[in-house]
Image 1 (tube, rainbow, N blue to C red):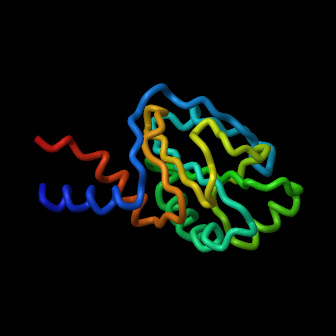
Image 2 (cartoon, helix red, strand yellow):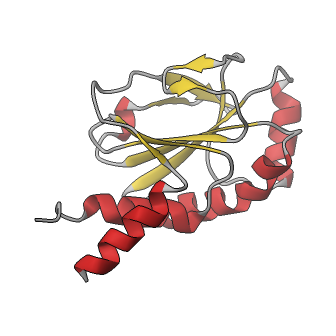
Amino acid sequence: MEKIKILLLLSFIAFVNMIYAGEPITFSAKDLQGNDHSIEQYRGKWVVVNYWGTFCGPCIREMPELSAFHQKRKNDDAVVLGINQEDIPAKLLANFTRNLKVSFPSLIVPFEEKTPFGNVTVLPSTFIVNPQGELVARQSGAITIQMLDDYIELKKQPILP
């Protein structure tokens, strides 16, 4: 069992850049329906923050994965928040996410390369905030539900002796 944990960690590090947890992240924004979302309101849950664009093929391909992850865990231990990195009307963005059947909140934030989570130079970019509100990982490029599940489950395990 311990060997499996180590192998999972090593394979996952190839995909996700680990970040040492520090100060809790402060971030809030409204979604397409005008509801407020903040990292603070999700304390006690993992928060997956995904920066994406409508023009980005890998972003669109990962949307079903992120939606499935959000649906599976939103009432338990994790949520996804999507942030579109374009300056497009909210109505167009709402239509786009509805057509893709996106299940997680899409937040309206002005375009920014430097975000409260770190620089976004590649789309998609995903940041993982732990239940204490600390940034602990980032992924530049597409992510899968399996990667997210593996990471969170591994982090829930006690540290190996």
